[in-house]
Length: 142
Ligand code: DQA
Image (cartoon, rainbow, N blue to C red; front, side, top):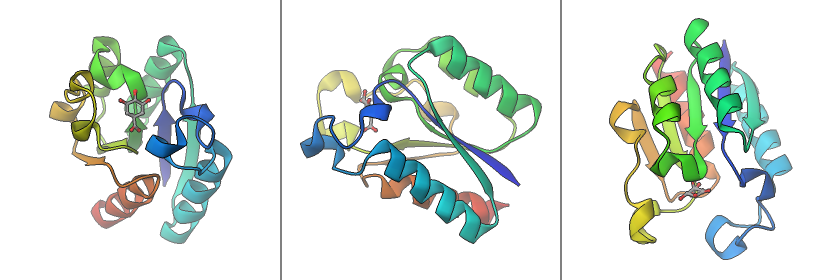
């Protein structure tokens, strides 16, 4: 079974980007961790990252058309992109929203997510391990 792990802008900078907030795990490490966890769980995990909103929307359409579960870290789009939210609304398989940092402990503008209300569930503030927990939950629900 396929799972898409989709990442929004600046997440390709993990490891060097504000390490106090996001940790020192690189994006390449994150990809490797998710693929390895997927193998354990018998998932074919594909990890993608983009800074282009249209590309993210197209990936979500792909997941909607093939009923593929999604783990989404929408990064900054989380807080304002109605286009990403509308694409998420079309998903039929589970959607897990993940944030590496605890967005509720940070600036006010990060407290609201336009995605959360339509996600199956949300994992925030547990670091990159949040992605692995999301994959495990998807395996439990399979
Ligand atoms: C983030 C939190 C967002 O507020 C921020 O814009 C990101 C990363 C996180 O994983 O903690 O880019 O989604």
